[in-house]
Length: 172
Image 1: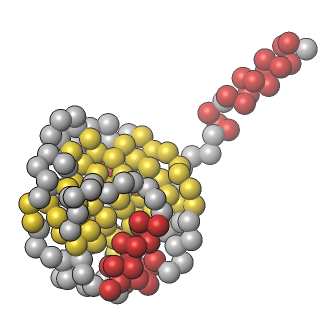
Image 2 (image 1 turned 180 degrees about the vertical axis):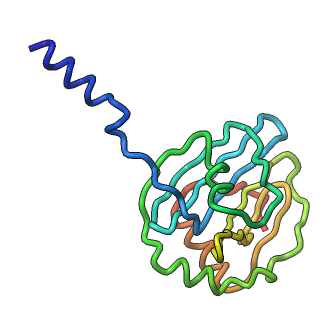
């Protein structure tokens, strides 16, 4: 009996039984970076299927960080080395809202809270194999926000997910 129980336990622990996280096709992202004290680069991605996945780069910089657009391969690299499934949400209205965001309606950055890092909300558009990120909101060291009505709706949606606490006193 003990051998049967041990065999069942070993089978249950087999990694083949663990469902992998699907390839993320990002719609929205919440990203926090800070290199002032301890290198930190974590975030959440809301995918086109409604999946919400947390990632943690364990302080490792992302080589494509300065780019505003890239391929799915570059974005998948960003979401490594650690991913964790958080939940699934209804994203049916999100693509249409992203399509209405005026990327030029972003306020100029203002310096506010030194060493607080950057908490940023992004929306992603997709065209011809390329994802382009649009800044919706940023708090922390530099403040900025997109003032278009569609961006404001997406910011409210992101906040409704309760993924991360915004820095108090360091918001636009």
